[in-house]
Image 1 (spheres, helix red, strand yellow):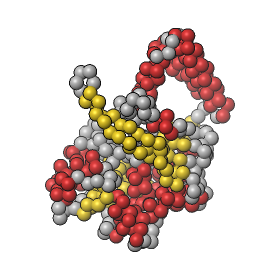
Image 2: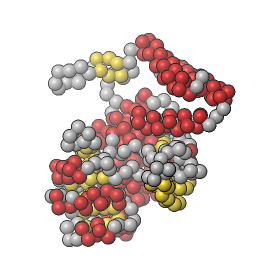
Image 3: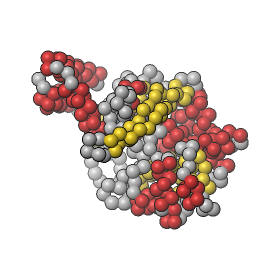
Image 4: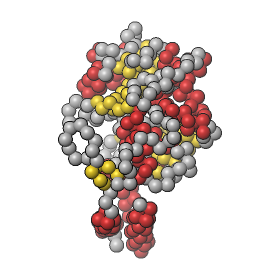
Length: 398
């Protein structure tokens, strides 16, 4: 069985097994949710909506603080150290950036919570008021999550914006929500500089990276207060400010879409909304616990990743950060001989979308083509057997 034949047969086998499982079990029941007429269903195992999986916890700020105190010395956030950055020229003359990444370096729950408290205080000392909004406009990283939790400790609503958003959509999102503080990476800072004259309410910009381009400093001038993440954290460490914690009904995030069908649309979500989403996931993903290691690489501006990075601290797990272009040993930005994020981290849990799974599949196929035919056949047979056992295991656990 060649890899391409198996590529057709494996999904077919899994689909048939899952279809048989679905036909035997009624998973959803009609539910009356009020409001406009429509059709709504709920999980057949629950008589009422799931609100929280953690007793007494009603907000995301409470959950993070509870988890950090409970798992104080355990590893929480991990990031790989950048050892070198090189340009490689392909046979057709095109240049590609390749990264040599080291091992994961970790922050414990206690260290992360200390940074969150310090950054929260620093934000208040910079003059950001509770009723004002913060936008996070950056790629997924540990600073993104800590900045989010810092805002929650001030009951500040966070506007989440995809790092890939174009100038028009970015300007529209920031102006519509009247954002006064933007937290961004160095790459995103350059985009802000280009539209600085069109931003109506921005007063403060905080760069996650420690190096701020001189062009950004000049552009900021007297219009913006421009600081680095570490400068704000240091400011708050020396001058702590008491937290102003939110209620369950307070708006936690305004999540903007990617703008693929026009101008992006913002969705307001309360602490109760996001906590209920995370709690509901725990009811359908079996066996999650404190030994789990999660590989984070999807945009935190999307509810899938935000829910995942709410759940993992809540169960005492660890989060290692990566990126779609460094995910596997054969990813586009990984220097040959350097481990991809998945190999370096050995995660037990990860979220996925079809485009990323396609890249993983292509990486597996490349590896398989380097194996002689008998071994190739054996590996694909084992893969099919494993998938069958996995589906049977899911059915038994349901």
